[in-house]
Length: 232
Image 1 (cartoon, rainbow, N blue to C red):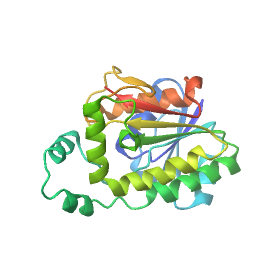
Image 2 (cartoon, rainbow, N blue to C red; image 1 turned 135 degrees about the vertical axis):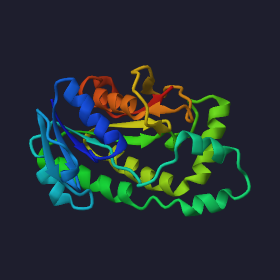
Image 3 (spheres, rainbow, N blue to C red; image 1 turned 30 degrees about the vertical axis):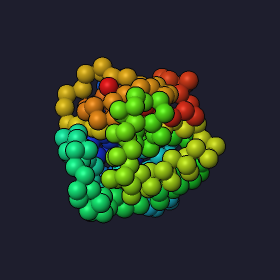
């Protein structure tokens, strides 16, 4: 397939690009700063800004599916997340200091509109397990999700708007909610699927999340219009 990756310079985006190429797909890497991406065989590099719908239309032209790897500029690491769960005093201060911006809530409607204008029918969105209400998780993990939602409520709100926009669209969408991510070697040993029971604080390599996103784009038709959890 020809897969467009929006946010190709981020932790997951780079790994999605690498995994898709490894599996034989053509890839269009889209970033605000395309000069940060090195040329490779079967890789097309284009400039695009999620705040500019017209730039996205040009960037994704000719693609069969779009994978969105955009996200806030700062995310908690697994170690930081566990520390947050052990801290009660100062929690509100930490939450207030985490400002994810509106890249998800503003960017997703532009990606949806651009996909429709460019004739791309499928859009895969990377999201987070903290968007879950926790009903599919164990009691302990539900508690972890509730506490993390309190801490990162601004990011949750931003991603929630983006998820809702995609769900309401007519595209063949898949939302992939990952556990906390880390820079580590991928193992391809992870759990993924609608309502999959995962550990929200179990560190998942970016590479494994990327593999799940490529699967959602190219080889898991039963995931279409489903929310998929991925983790360990």
